[in-house]
Image 1 (cartoon, rainbow, N blue to C red):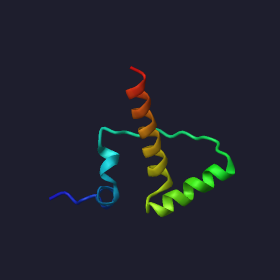
Image 2 (cartoon, rainbow, N blue to C red; image 1 turned 180 degrees about the vertical axis):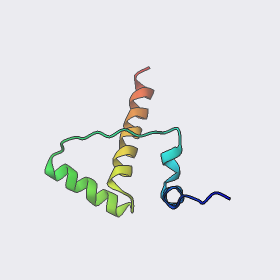
Image 3 (cartoon, one colour; image 1 turned 90 degrees about the horizontal axis):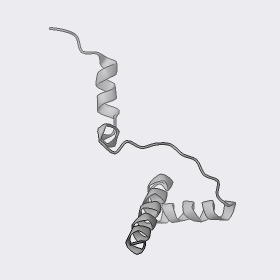
Image 4 (tube, rainbow, N blue to C red; image 1 turned 135 degrees about the vertical axis):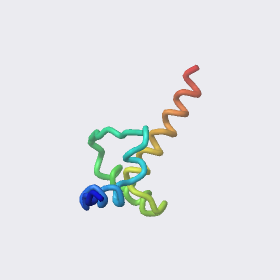
Length: 71
């Protein structure tokens, strides 16, 4: 019986479901006004979410709105 690789087992246990999904994410960076970033951080805290998830949701909403009005 082959021995299990502990590192592989650890990676499987700790990897997030989204890391293996078809929704691969790409990194980007952007520069925001200090007051804008602060407001986004406060909003994320109030909504009990991460800044990443908040901004991604806001962008998705803006894209949906844009696509529905551009036709």
